[in-house]
Length: 136
Image 1 (cartoon, rainbow, N blue to C red):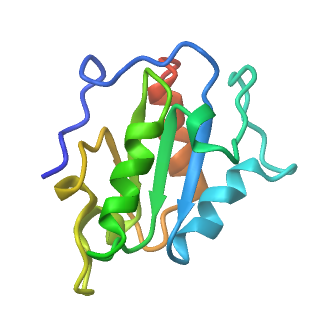
Image 2: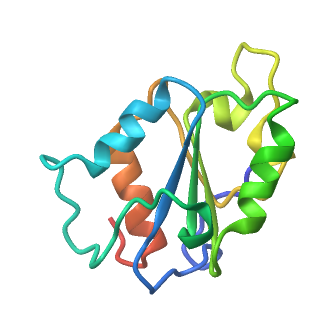
Image 3: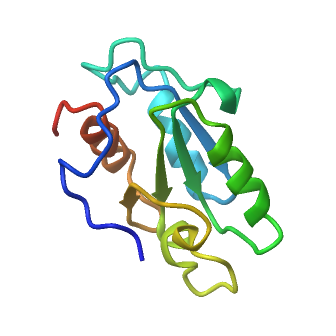
């Protein structure tokens, strides 16, 4: 099961957040929407969405994780820069929903869960605010 969100349990990422979005389903479109020019990320100094997982310190998994995709997700998590954090974005990533998939928490430790189908871009902004130690 994913860990409950407690502020002191979360890794406080003080360097700029460098999220990498693993878009496996339709949730990914709302996840990458946070990087759109019209959506401002105030207070996130230097935050950018990287295209290379080795330079990222936050992995956002959006969508269903199949059993055959699980080793790739684990490889991506292990390649993240430290301090690193994993966000399960959407019901499919959190629990597998109605599909025969693997919940992300069975593959790797999950630091934050952003529920919804699809989850809102505002909910992702709040999750990133918690990670950066800036609150909501």
